[in-house]
Length: 316
Image (cartoon, rainbow, N blue to C red):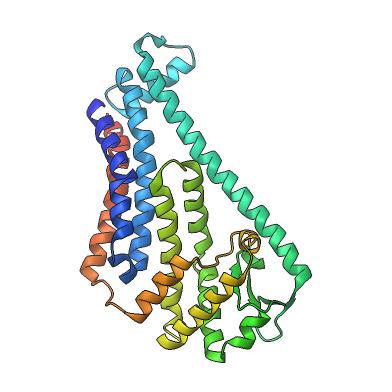
């Protein structure tokens, strides 16, 4: 398993630094947000699996020729049936590090979920006091605010779209329709789950610069996906105007209000700039061959570490 551990370590390094940096700087993701989102998820999952797998394989190397055999001997050691003499200090350290990293990632994922749910609960309670249901639109509430603001607040059957009086007074009927379709797409496609996963990834590994790049890129890509759905119903010019007006409203809100949205998506200036750029200077979507190549690369990224860890042991 020595070669496997080093290959997984090299893959983990590549997925932790050069690959995310290159992808974040590439222009093609704006042409195919869905394929790019799949690739970002594959990078994150394969990177985490490779980091843990590299340490696990190195630690289990003295105990067996493959992962399954090594884990069997490790279980025997844990139950007191076998001696620990076969494990050197560095191998024991690697096993401990793998266990700690796995526990850290899982704990951070659950902690991030708890925090987001708590923020949403507080924000929903605040909306209950400060908003009124829309008479014309189901699952929509209106807040008394002069700034043009629109966002969605996920919550399963209690999910709502939040609009401000300022937005409804400023936008035309078609522009408002574009905004509603955009926000409803976020809820329908459950984009908040992606935001949760990448927020947890960044919280778990804040020292990793690419975790910030991944979160920022995924946030931008889901906005583009929602824009593409809106473009099926409204014109490009209508959507551009609506985005610009809503962005101006987000800029008027105090920072405390932006933080207190409980995981609701409000655009950053960078995301708004990227959205407007692709709408004002549209590029043709990626061809089917290129999209298939991206999806194939994503599948390969996930399959490679998984196969190295599982398949050899299955045939032992």
